[in-house]
Length: 208
Image (cartoon, rainbow, N blue to C red; front, top):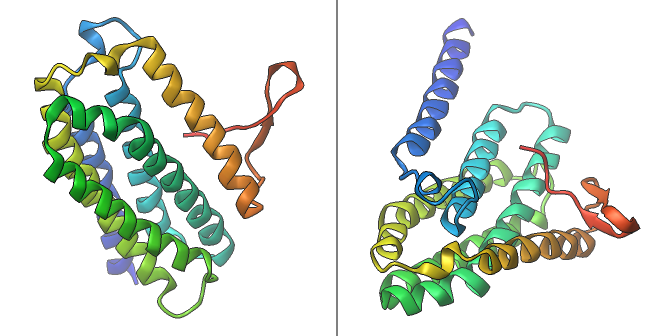
């Protein structure tokens, strides 16, 4: 038992180190443009968060915590993939002309969405539930690595100026909020709702 516990500690530490390495190796895009994040940085923030959640899921033991975190992960991926497909990828196609890479990304999204649907139709403890969560995590992390190491550099080389426009960043944030509202209402998952200024009800994204 002690050996197993030590192994889990080392695994958790190594995963944290990998996430920190991903942050440190990424280009410091905001330093040259001021404090406002670029669209790439907004996407990278989502990447780091979902990686952390998948690692956290691997450490959980009780079914209730697993169910809550799995739902949070699935909702976050639904929102993130939709923003990329509806806003980010069309602009990336125009800038890079790399249809092959972006077509692969869309296919990877479709595969993840099918797996998410399967997970959402199951309950923690069902046969293959944890296995499907692990596979989803592996697929997501591979997709993230390919985006950040292949697509993002191409976009920067193509000088995709629209990424840095306040309008474009604002559009991404607006979609983010609207999609969180939609997917949570659709799924009946309202644990993260918050009250927006003026009395409007908007979803508050899960705290990092």
